[in-house]
Length: 232
Image (tube, rainbow, N blue to C red; front, side):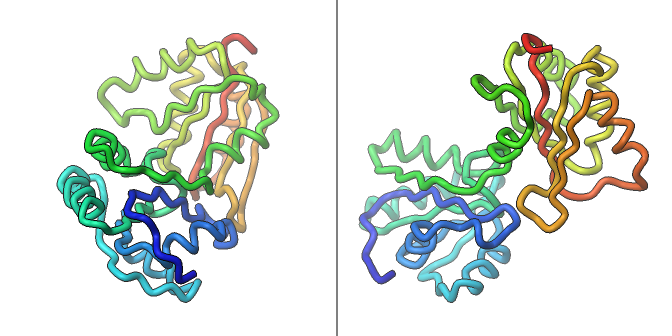
């Protein structure tokens, strides 16, 4: 693990729950990187400690400082340093920070090296039982402004649609989709992917809502895989 990395921006996925879901290549990259830029330095620090990795330099890189940090990190690469970007969980740029540094790197002709690895929507898709020859990933729905327009557009897609939602808004989201006429579409609710309490609920959307609404509360991270208009 002592190899020197060439100067570049490395996009390094980390586990979304099960700590064994990190690749050997990711571990080698984190070990060798001159700088690790992390969405949550505490979480990343714990992960590094699990594998006995001592970061050469660990610094924060999150939504509110992303633009400024992007320029600083690109400058570091141009000075000959290797920079690894990690999110709190999963793959950078997928509903997580990372986009701005990738754009800045491309615009400055700086090399970007993406590593494959953990992300929540892929296992949710593959275990959903819904058609996968085409799909649309839409991330998190807007919390307020433009939410209804967003959901109406989602329901126009012919292909399977994948979205994320938080535990305290998931029932509201399903209620809104039922109100928009999607209650009879097939849905897979994937909860706590890769974790101890991993769960899949596969049914018509309105029945999934009934099952979730019967619980005292919702816990965990949710991925919703919804049948497309063309399949229903």
